Length: 324
Image (cartoon, rainbow, N blue to C red):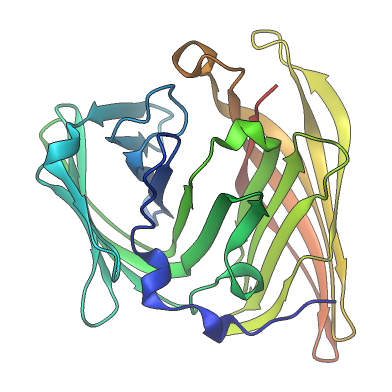
């Protein structure tokens, strides 16, 4: 089993990875589940991969505890955008996400309908899967992914309209994707998600190749409190209770089970979907099939590590992207 050291991650991995190709894309993603029941998702699309023309834009989702959600997208002209090739420092108009000298991240996003001013501070060290961060390298076609903040403390202010909402939590996350080729040319879709248990942090990506003869791309990260237990490609994801979405007319699994066994760590987790939080058909903008779901699920997991066995349970959110 692969259990490569996460110390290979460097701040430069979260910098811009520029390519001259028209198919070049790149985004910086952040989210947080706050103690007061609010949550948010922020994405800086330096080049938006899910549109036929990869335009720059910022996406902001704010989920309120009463079930009312705010979803906004703000496009930008390329000339109003910049990013560092040394570390994370991305600007779009007056909006930005940047890593400060002390390692913390500052994020400021404002649209007509909503906004966020947040600080992210790492609890766990950054992760570059398999020491390279490369999901695919095929004939010069690159797809990359790294996780600068697997779990972080977050504090600051959300804005819905003109109303400020103070927020804080220890359930923040940040990852970064880039590539010089369209994802749908190589991937047919993926399941991706995390568990933020009181003790345990789990991150997983299960990426299906467009060509069924190509290998699966699977990445998993497991930590207990501030200690990383396992980073591996060797785990299984089993789908169960397949259901056809009545609107999107595509199938997804209502139950997922993740299983991994290392000489020192055994992990088993089942996620049972309770509801579809969000679903989008992006095919019109992309001009190729693109479907997205975000699920709210109950999880129960058993972890054997360091000579002890623990069982945990709770609630989590995960996603499914489909390109066919």
